[in-house]
Every structure is written in structure tokens, then in C-alpha cells.
Image 1 (cartoon, rainbow, N blue to C red):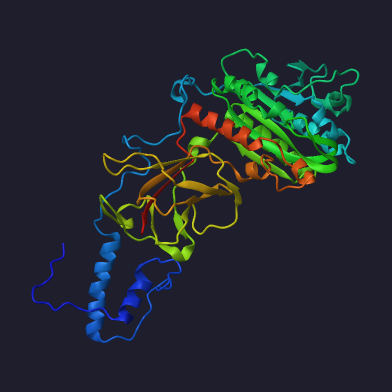
Image 2 (spheres, one colour; image 1 turned 90 degrees about the vertical axis):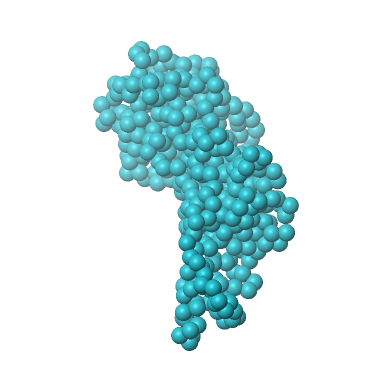
Length: 484
């Protein structure tokens, strides 16, 4: 510890020196009085003042990074337990008790036979649909898999006599003319096909994923049967030429005409085979000229580190500062002693702050609160609770595999620490391709998106995380001080 000598005359900091320290030591966002620069500004000073400035610099640095009080570990809850994804009651056997699935020899291919798929065969250039069917067959053969094809719909998955996907090149497959009967969507029936053995089979569904009335529960319930046996999942999304009417999941007409419409290949089974099959199909389709593709594979979630907060910004920027100590009723806390937190000071006029998992932040897709974030206060004393009070999420912005949260902080909000936990972080394309609540879009733009794709993929990813006991995708902790 430092000890001050007795009899020393207190040094009065000049306005010039005040600016010197303000500019060099504190990250003030466009402050009203202290402009932000990236390094100290060298000023011509006398030797005595230079020595005094060094002493003040040491004291200032200790104030920012010194032996401040320690906040609770960001990754632990109020009981001292590591924050993890919430596992529902009745969950299947944890992964530690499961053996690795045996590689499948077959691939069960289900093609959605409902009328909403008819337009892929009626496009001005229907060869894209045919090339997809061929790519699936070729990929299965390349990987040494025996393909078994089914027409999915009408409450059953009917095996096709040819055993391949070629039957789906016939428009009657979807229109419901001889030799096919018209059927309604029942995607879950592919997963209701029994399969011998304890290991999950490899299944591949080809569909627009416009599930009836937006109800994803039957499909998820069907898939969970395989997840319980150790299966993983993945989805390849493409946009193919389409001509005809487009309906939403409530069977309401959206658009009629020509467009590029989403089509999805949803696979479940042993993780390595799911990844290999979808990547092989994507590669072949790219070589055939289909460039609008997105791929998500959920089998390797445990290999991804939990994202943490790397930066913060006050809203608006001039109404506060980040990276500075904060004062709570329980004491003073410094950034240097709590590297897993972002520190924020809010001045009068501040409406909130942003916290993000990468620095610097750029781009991304912005949506209002998607209901994917669990926001809670971190108790600092026995009298504290975890209720966030009036703190709310204004926007969630996703850029690639990074996330930014914009939080509203009412003026009366007491200072404290908070944690935002995201168990499953949606990929940016899940949001971009989702039609839900997009009243800002024109009919043709809506037709190029899918009802509930975000909900479906996020739910599926969450189920797999729970099966594998994966940690949350992101845990962001913040210590903020409000100034009356």
C-alpha cells in the first residue's frame, strides 16, 4: 500500500492537467467536457509538474484497476451455481450416459407432398427443382448410403416404389393427381417411421416448412424421439425458382407470381453424417448454379465457447461513460478487478445502454425483443433479488454469430449488476428469412420468407443443447451506475 509523507503540501491540479488526465485515463463517450482520444497528449511541462503528474497518474490508474471489490462470477447465479441452459423436467438421459450413435447405413428421405410445394415444379425453369432431387440422390450415393424415399403428408409417410426422389419431379406429386392423392402437410410422420436398433437413423426432410397453423410442436416432438437416442440435426436452406400462389401457415394467400422461394432440407441423425450429407448437397447445388444457400449444423454446440460481453455504449453516447468505476450501496467496484463485466455510468438524460459480444460492432439484423434473453439482476447482498425491475430489452441485433443488446434503463432504476443469458443464439439468417410479424414487407417480399422458421430452428437448437448439457450460447454481465 502507498503511504503519504507528512507535511507535504497538497498539490492543486491545474485545468490543463485535469484535461491531461481526463483525456488519457477515462473512456468518456463524447463527454460534454472531456473529448475522447486514444492516447495521452504530450504537453510541455516543467520538471516539477512532470513529477507531480506521474504521481497523479499512478493514483488514477490504481483507482481504475486497483484492488476494488469483486463482483460475483458472471457465469454463476445467486446460489453460486454455474449458469446453464434450463433443462425441462422429464428430459431424457443426459449425454454422459449415452453412447455415441452408430453410423447409419441408410438415409430416410421424406418429401413434403402438400400443395404448397407445387410451384417449384411450375417455375419458368423447373430444372432447379430437378437438380435438387438429383443432388440428394448423388450425395447419398457418394457417402455410401442406401436411399429410401417417402412421400410425407396426409398423416403418414408413404414409401415410394422407386426408392428414390425422382417421383417428386412429377407435378402430380404435389397437385394430387393420379397416381397421387392430395394431402395436407404432416412433416412429423417422417420421424414416426420406425427403425430397428438403439442408434438413431439418418433422416432428411425436403419441405418449405410452412407447418399447418404455425404449429411446430408435432414436428419437434417427432424429432425428439431421435434426439433421445443421441441424434443431432442440421438444416440446409436454399431459394429456388417458384411460380404460383404462396400461402402462409394459416392457408391465407400472400402472393401469386414468380419468385425465388425458400426450401429447406432438415436432417437428423449421427452428427458427423448430418454434417457430411448437408455439406455434400450444398456443394453439388453450388456447382449447379444455386448460390443462395445457408447451412446450420447443431451437432457441435459443445465446441463453441460461451460468448461474453466485450464492449458497451451509453444511449445516447454523450450521456455517460463506459470502462469506469461504479459506486453501489455495497461498495465501489473497478473494471480491473472484474474483467467479465462491462462497466457503465449513466448521466441524467441517458435512456439505456448497449452491450455487445465483439468490439468494434458493425452491421447486423435488428429486431425488437425476440423473447430469447433471460434478463436478471445479480444480487450483491442478502436483501437483493433477481428481478430486472423496469429494465427491458429494446432491440436484439445479430451479426453472424455475434449479438448486441440495446437495453432501456428508466431514470428511477437503482444502480447494480445485471446478467443477460441467451441459451440459444439464433443465426442471422434465421431472422432474415423469418416472416413472423414482418408487416413492413411487401407481399412479394413476404413470400420470399417463411412463417415461424426462427421459432422452429431456435426450438430445435435449444432441444439439442438440453440433450447435450451445453452451456448457454451467451452470458453478458454489466455493472451500471445511474446518476440522479
